[in-house]
Amino acid sequence: MTDRLSTGIDVLDRRLDGGIPAGSIVLFSADPASQSELLLYELTDARGTLYLTTLRSDQAVQDALDRTKSRVGTPTVRDIGGDAPLDAANRLVSALPENANLVVDVVDPLERADRSRYRRFLTELQTAMVNTESVAFLHAMKQDDDPRNRAMTEHVADVVWDLDTQVRGSDVVNKLAVPKFRGGRALDETVKLKLEERVAIDTSRDIA
Image (cartoon, rainbow, N blue to C red):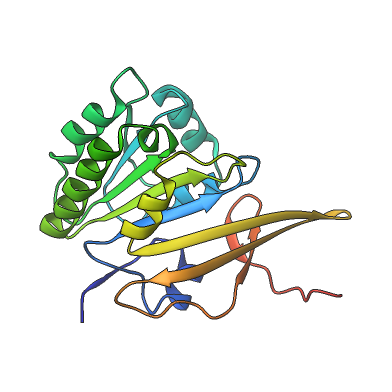
């Protein structure tokens, strides 16, 4: 059995039989107006993390990490949101150490690249994750008009996390689905999360 790497989020590790298989690519889809970044921040507590930001500046991400009350590590934050984000991502990924986390927040600008170039990026990313026994987390925004290569990301990803955020009356309800888990067991039901200051399981019951 492939070694599992802890996500750093205990509530998810318990549901995922210990974590994510080393060498995996995880696609994490969420609404832009959600607390999905809390999960990304807590991932950095598990092991050394390279955090690539494409929309926010590296300073904005670092400030958010410093302010959060979640458990966080000391990730290396790099801004790749310039004119050639794929080239910048490739250069940094090639230097990733062993047993590390890679976070791309968000992957959408990379998915808008030429199809052949983006496919080559995913292929090289897969190789890098396997060779270093690391895990890549690609944070993707749900939109009415997805980037043209989103389906390719979904297919190549070994694991898919899909966070659904809904406002019901006075409550904000977050449910995480894991519909795909290559080499493991996908979850047959969603996990209701509380995304406030930290990530926790919401044990309240839904009332129809």
